[in-house]
Length: 142
Image 1 (cartoon, helix red, strand yellow):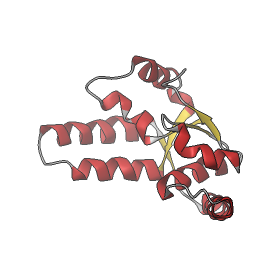
Image 2 (cartoon, one colour):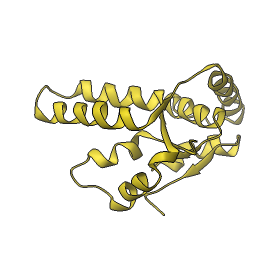
Image 3 (cartoon, helix red, strand yellow):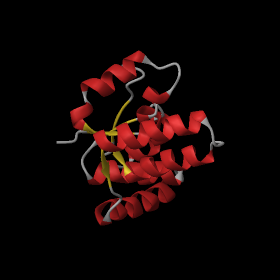
Image 4 (tube, one colour):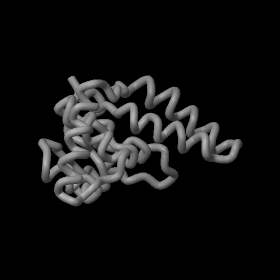
């Protein structure tokens, strides 16, 4: 049973040369209760493809394909998430606080699946959490 939806800045922490041990330990601790969104997966794959060909790109691609993709369920952006997304966009527009599209898509996925969104950038999701049931955690600050 998934409880946590890990944002890109969380799931990418173990692949960094200098890691935040608090975050990587928490990922290990809650690995069986964590997943990522198809939006995050797309961001990761796109980021890897933008890198120049070479050892770094190959190492990251290997890590994400052979470890992350095999360990973490990738939650699709489905019709339920689409309905939540359209509601969020309208409510944010009415409030005058639009949010970045990818953040709104990821938040909609979390809300639609009743997951806690774990991100380092909680301020990016503040406007969304104020108008919805979005639950947030920041493992960098715990």
